[in-house]
Length: 191
Image (cartoon, rainbow, N blue to C red; front, side, top):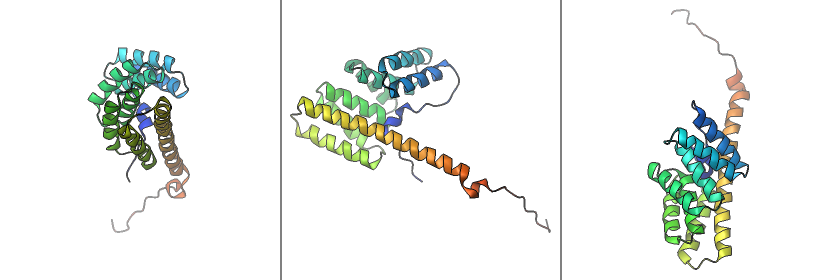
């Protein structure tokens, strides 16, 4: 079975000990609930306690992107891409920050790298359309807004779809009669 994770899954929290994990979880929740300023504070706290936290660094970059602080978002996300070039959310939001700054060549570079990663197929179609628009050039402000919103919403949809699929698999394991059946030890008479 092949697992396909959406770019929005960047904020999946790895369980571990310490306050950094708590700060990262609170930051992720704030970001998902539309409170990016609060998320920035939590991700910065997590990074102060553990500068190696990739999930906190990506969350910080996405939060800064959502606040319109594109230079700061690019700094955090470029660092994340350097550390983990295969991370789809870091590449996506780095590309979106470049689109907002009208740095279309850099955005195209990040979207091309994103396109090479394993992604949900409907999201791949959105990335392909975005690449076509960038390559055509001459993007107006409304087209930039539409391109960015499409990819951002597509990433959220892809993450939610992956989370739902995982929850369904977990639920199936709990109710499936095959897994619920008691296990009996069968002993061989000649053993």
